Image (cartoon, rainbow, N blue to C red):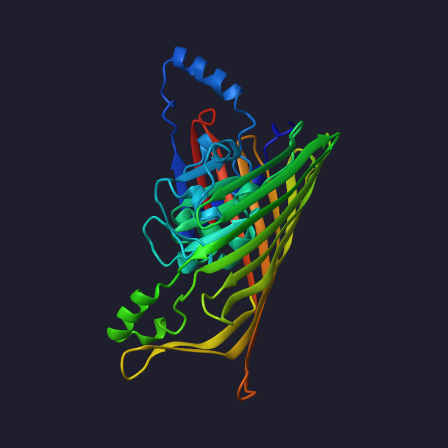
Length: 432
């Protein structure tokens, strides 16, 4: 590999880096259970590792390493496992990881995203980072993915996930979009369930030379259910919580979700690879009252591009960027209330219409440096611009409320991973 000629400069650099990371960041150490196995067991384990060299992880350490060398609590759900699961009642990506240790998933389906709580930290928006193909997304944008279009889901628990941002104290969840494989072919299926729920799905994929492709369509159409039963909302009204009755469900909240996904991958013999992924959904959700619409055919789009290439045998450079768009138009009415006699009263006139859009432009650059044979030094930078626009137009008064804000986020991170004792011992430290 050309790494035998070590220099004092390299050694000094590593010493300084580790000094900084121990002071500011965190250090993880792992000793796999086979570290002190007998020679016969060692041979059988070596044979096992030879059959699993293709298994890598990038979520836990932001670099490609064998999962057995990761000194953090992390879990992965592969596509093979997902294919054996039935169609989820809560048809979003939260159900994919529900059964993993340290993971609790709550739902407000079909309105919002899965509430993924890691390590019991609660408050999913502030303590769990949602990632799609390695780049962070706003939690509501996770509903852009259909479970059919997820190739793998990685869950990283604990403070080691701080490399992904300040709000990752509970952990990080990375949904890797599905890719085409050789001889994948075409598949068509239809699921039907109670409440007149239809879920069609079609996908096609293959590998041609250095290229791989995947295309899919999925639907989720249902008469829905009473998201906010009137009887329960009346009970809350009488307990002083009057705000819940206004949008109670007189009728079922029917919904219509149409998903389209695609991904193209390219890789040459030198290790240079690139891919482009697109995930799109159009969402409609009825409010359960006349003229009340919770989501009036809002569009959501996530387009992600990635390229990486080795720079000789000493380094690899990676660049990822994305366009993320969330559109959520709504229409509200006067809604339900109780009159002086305790009887339900419905005002179905349009109260106001809401335009709500969120656009994000994340970009991340990373360099993996191999100063020694058993050492990976990762240096990266991240930037994201988020634009949120919200406008409420009141039908009767003509009044308009406007909210428009732009937020810029930037970060720099540094990580060092050292493998010792023939990779039986791994030490990782990092700061962000």
